[in-house]
Image 1 (tube, chains in turn purple, red):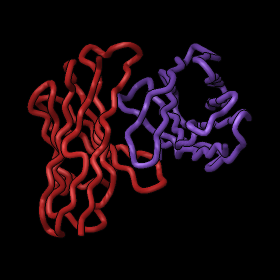
Image 2: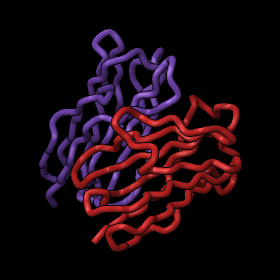
Image 3: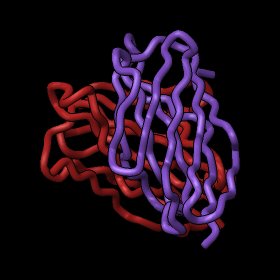
Length: 111
Length: 118
């Protein structure tokens, strides 16, 4: 399977704490994207990082990419209860034309 | 911009019936659309890649006769679940890639269709 893996599978933190999720993938990529999904809803695009980038910020989000280790991390700082959702990484391959999604991390932020 | 819609958002049907799900790019042209399936508390699994005017490319393990895909125009792709059974109950999500690739080959996702087969 070309699907990536994320860890942890589930994460529960207190409001105000930081949440870190990791994503590992298997192939050479063009870019990696992080998405958020509220329960039973569609996907919301959060941030994209290209293969030649190492770190990117967007508001309370910080994404890193290590292509040598084929891994990425998503950090959400100062978490809020509204951040409760599932978070998926998705890789876009160099040679293919598809996205492959990671297994996802279910984040619960306790008020 | 770059909005993708899906219709219906939710469908309940009896076992043995066929269900058609539409995916439309509302304000852009999409040469390529993708269909994903998501079971509860699991990730999205790519089912097939749909190219306008040609046959869809199915991922391994996806039955092409079961999941019929038609991409008749640059703004519309349809997925028909034929002779649906309870195990086909799932959340189906489409995405569309902007003609010409767009910035970083970005894809835009529809809101999903919840299919429940009784």
